[in-house]
Length: 273
View 1 (cartoon, rainbow, N blue to C red):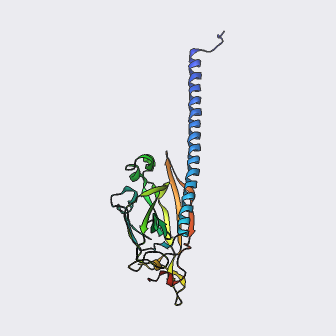
View 2 (tube, rainbow, N blue to C red):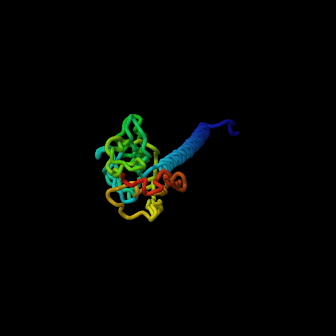
View 3 (cartoon, rainbow, N blue to C red):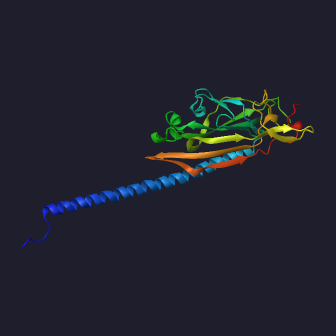
């Protein structure tokens, strides 16, 4: 008669099966945890991009001048990592060709002097910034996402000076902005995921009233307040690489459109005194 009970071989087989089952359970838990973390990151990124887009829309809506397509801007210093154009490897940007929105806020008084605030929103290479930024300015290493973009904002107060227009803007709109540096606005932007379009620019009819016309290919020089863009549309698309997964977030780009409400209504507002 065969003896009852488990043999050593059966016990080893049972142990091996148990270990395999535990490994599968652990893998499932790990996969579930990674999936949950990815979903949470995706939700946070979507909210960050929506918040950034709303902020940019508000800036455009309150602007007194929006740089039209064709204008070439240089911001900060050539060696500054927070102003480096990822397409040109320098601090020079061409509105309408590069992914950027630049504007002037209405005049205000700061420390006893009249200034206009120059604001520009643009992308930087994530890997470039991570290798150069320190402290809180560094978004954190993530080699799998070095090719992604960061959305940055650059702000600088500019003195209006004596040569000013009736609406308070400088008679000649500046295109070379020195000093200051950019600050992080949003992380994990898809390369090419900040798309900007300018449909119309400012003009005046025979009676001197403001009208909208298609933006010219090349804005006049010198650049003046009457050459402002009057409508800006842009979209934001995020992207995260995690493991073997490379996902656009959200699935469709977030789209925004804004028109500045502080532009001159009459030509007299931007005619030199």
